[in-house]
Image 1: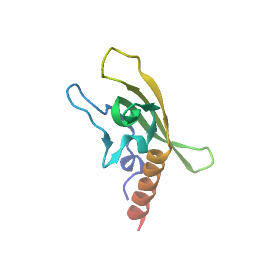
Image 2: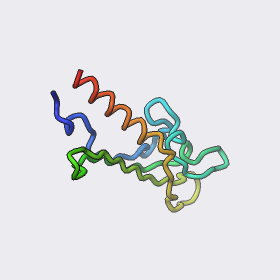
Image 3: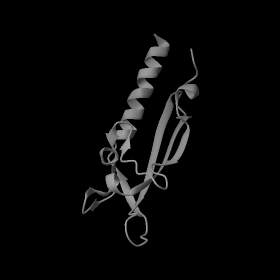
Length: 113
């Protein structure tokens, strides 16, 4: 059986867009499915702005013989059109965290079976 730690992504920090390119999807889904960064003239800002993501998942003992799993998903977005603007905070929809949780359960069940 693989260890729980080997089944969990412990840390990931990335920018969803790099200079000269615009990424409007996270996997196959629009970023706005996972983040709410407000709206722009073109629609959800998460799909039109440059989005900076920090995603961290951690596994730790709960003190009762069980294991807790936490995911922290923080993001900011910045309009890259026109004049320089400050980054805006984005809120999570909870969908990505739930997806990670379900994939972890799936992996744990397949490694135990």
